[in-house]
Length: 316
Image (cartoon, rainbow, N blue to C red; front, side, top):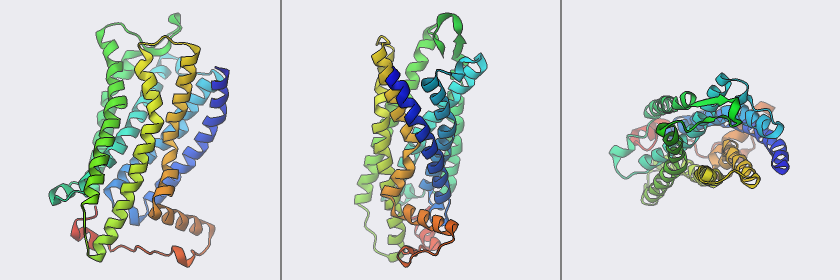
C-alpha cells in the first residue's frame, strides 16, 4: 500500500498541472473560428470544461485521500454526499461527451443527407445541455443513497439496506463500464465505415472534409485511449462486490484510479498528435501571445470558406 501512496503523491500532482493547463489550452484552441463552427468541436469543448473541473477538483480530492490519508468525504455527511455526487457525475459525463462526439461523427460522415443535417452546432448545444441535465437528475440517487456512518468504518459509501440499494451500484457500473465503451466502439466503427465510402471532388467541399476527417481521427484516437485507460478500473469495480478486499486488491484499485485519471489529461496531447489543424491553431495562438510572427510554413493552408461549407451541408 505504501507504494500506491507514493505513486499517488508523485503522479497525481503532475496530472493536475498538465490537466489544468492542457484543458485550458483545449478550450482556447477549440474556440478558434476555424474549429468552433463544427458540431464535434462543441462536444470536445464540453469535454474540456468537464475535464478541467475534474483536474482541479476530483484529482485534488484523490490526492489528499489516497496520498495523505485526508479524505474530505469523511468530514461530514454533507461533504460525503455532495463530493461523491460531483465525482460520479463528472466521470460519467466525460465518457458520454465522447460518445456524443462519436455519434456526431457518424451522422456527419453519412451518405444520407438527412442524417448529415442532424450534425449542426445548434443541435449539439441542445444535446449537451440535455445530457448534462439528464445525468445530473439520474445521479441524484447518489447523494440520497450514500451516507457517512462512522460506526462501521466503511466511510462514505452506499450501504446494502434493501434491494434497490444493492441494484443502484450495478446500474452505475452498467452505464459507465458496459454501455459507454460499447457505444463508443459501435459509433466509432460506423463513422470509419462511412468515411471510407465518402468521395467528394469540389475543392471547397474537400477543404471541409479534410477538417472533418481530422476531427474524426482525433476522436478515434481519443476513444481508443479512453477505453484503454478506463478498462482496468472498470474490471476492478465489476469484481468489487464478489471479491474480498485485500491489500493487493486495494493496490490494484489505486493503479486503476491513476490510469483512469489520465483520461482527464490526455485529450490535449492526443489532439496535438492526431490533429494537424489543432497543432496549427495552437502554434498560432502561442506565437501571438509571445508577440512573434508566424513562420510562412504555418500560414493558413486550409483557409475555408465557411459559407461555402454551410451551403454544401458538409459542415455544421
